[in-house]
Image 1 (spheres, rainbow, N blue to C red):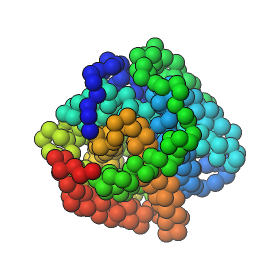
Image 2 (image 1 turned 30 degrees about the vertical axis):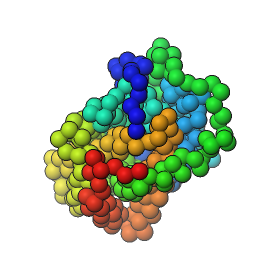
Image 3 (image 1 turned 135 degrees about the vertical axis):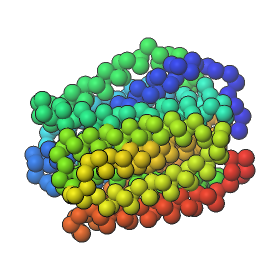
Length: 406
């Protein structure tokens, strides 16, 4: 497709703004599973129910992502990001009520926070990148996800120790609001291409249009099938790693949170590394395929964790797992942006997220259900490992980057 006619916004401002909102969106998304062992007591439910909460988050993210293209066109990508931050803050506040109905509202609002971020940031970053640096720039922005998740893994246990889980949740809600205010100075420059007359619903901008565009391209279809499996593994890790380490291996919440943070440190390093070689040293789709093989292999090791495994043996597995399980998203989104029709990047990205967030809706309850049924986490991890390995092997049959078919 045609490249943009010059840079309409500074690269630094574009990356900094999208990185900030991506980070806080990830904090809101990933802090709840870390809260789970403490919050479950006040909610009066088992920790495995966090899978249902995660599924609702992904349902909210999927639906908001599908309609985000029209909102980005009308109000601007950064304004949409600011509204997402407000949604995150309100959602976290509802979670502190420790009531089932409030948890549902909380999950939906946190999903509404998470869904528009990728379509909006893809819209911004595509304007300031070219085919050679796009995978790296997208990966740089996407490091906000593991940084936010890692922050949640370290900060939540510390805040609970200092205060309680409700106060800790409200502190994170305040950070989301501060982020919305922090990006206001760069909003005008990054949203200079907004079209105020855009119809929000109907006129080809509804929830079906992005899916139709997605399905019209055979390469995007196949990439999205792989993303479904990868996203399922990622959602399972995000929702259950801390619970798994506290329940099955006997870690304290602080130790489990630290292990989760190590996985996110690996994710940061992985996203930079994979983004640096993809499209330059190795074709991007070959990198995506290899990530599935590495993730599946690490999940097999994770399934073998036991109480006699020392922390020193578990942390390296978590580190490598993070590099691959969280390292594919930016490459996938970069490929989607490159294949999207002119002017439809945010819409097609929203459609592509049907597979990413749909996986969370499917996998998280499946993982939690298998854990509840079998009494431990071994079988769920083995199932997820097998599905991820299969997706990685399938990825090697995709055409190379130079053989895109439309």
